[in-house]
Length: 362
Image (cartoon, rainbow, N blue to C red; front, side, top):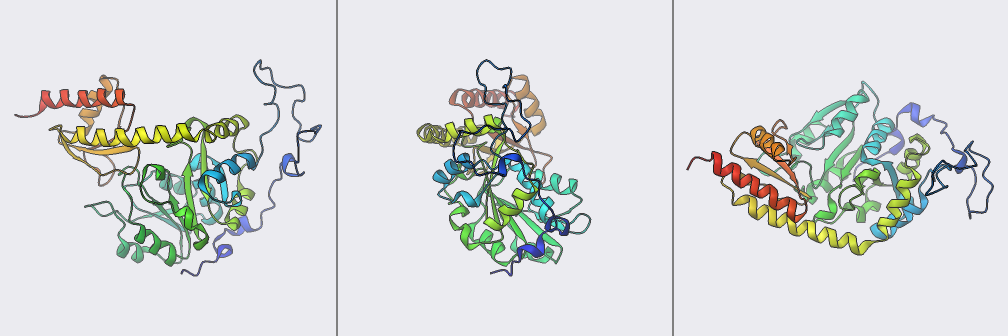
């Protein structure tokens, strides 16, 4: 096990911070029978015909929503932090742990771009160790070589974006156990995977922060609700640094309603997994497709034999928008295709067949 010391990793200015306390954090709410004259709100309400509740600030700690997530994830609410999307949480992690112009984070391209963008915004160097070219897995030997006393954060994405595959669980465990800094494991796509979430083992790893989201499998991308599952000690610091009311009242309300409809969630999840298999099989039969990479997510990384940019533009002309990932390292001539409805998937497949029939040399 690593010799993890949380306070030694936190930036000095954060350790000394006197956090802002919102009005709603200064009393213990036990019911709704209060005259609220504490937060400089408009007591007469908003100019809305459908509701008169949005004149009040939302719960700054989102306790009801956390309880709902806790029931589903089987994790104590005290180990859950909610952010305005996972991007806010990534930003918070940099703000808390990385010293600008001094420390670095380690990422494993090809991977989610915000780990690098957010780090650069905070003046943190980004050390890149490429995934293995043959099967997009962690290169443990090279990772060990780049770790030094200025390595504060490691970002791991599994299932990985944009490749879609699971990273080997034993490799992730080795990194968490040996690294003395913070390991951020992004599990945004975990519900589409057969691999078990590391959240069931969160008690074992005091240096682990797991990122999940309601944007993907729960279909709530427009609400911007990211989830961090980690120790209460780390969550304490996240609560000190976050903006007071980082998730709106309406986002909390709709998310709670969605989480109460688990049957529909599982129905949609089953359909996505079924469509993923259908798409993989259908795309593999098209001559212009070189390879469909194995996926444990709600998208497929597809390598094409023609310039991917030309196929991308052709699909745009046919009103289909996919993601051209050919400029991403180790993703030459690759498109990333999200799993849609059956009708949407059929339309895309037919357009790919037409393009193939038109340009393929027979």
